[in-house]
Image (cartoon, rainbow, N blue to C red; front, side, top):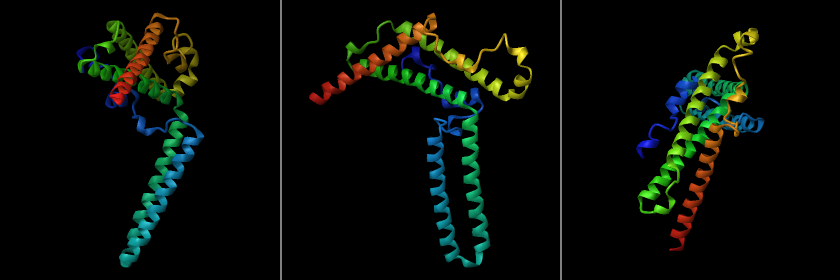
Length: 216
């Protein structure tokens, strides 16, 4: 990895620190279809636990109370975990949107890293033009995502106070939707758009190289 993109990626550890919880604690997307799919998986696991209990009781009949209690605890744990994640996901859709933004951002960083490796392998034609501008755009995006994650956590952890004292924040806090990087008219938005366009260009160049290798 080249020095100018080192540290740009937002790692899982940093994401957990900024948000107070990892992406694995939420279902993404937070939709009824996703919830139903995960619930079906849990039902499947419960069936396996029941089968395991039945087999173990058959092998060790004298310890049937222990196996019943052990497997019952496992079933309750599975149901509780699934219900908790569904509830958290439905209550934190803004945080899920931010996690998705982080994934897209990290995808751009990884695409540039892969493109650099292709260039270093002797393919000078895939060199990214205006690289300093792209790195500047990525740094600005990173700063905004970090700010958004910190702000979302503050509002989430103080939800009741903010709700009952909304007049204190009316002139100072923007809505969470506004934390999304969407103002394409701004200079920052323009740089982001250029970075995204370059990422598309990187994918196109990589596809050309793949097709060329396939032809050979």
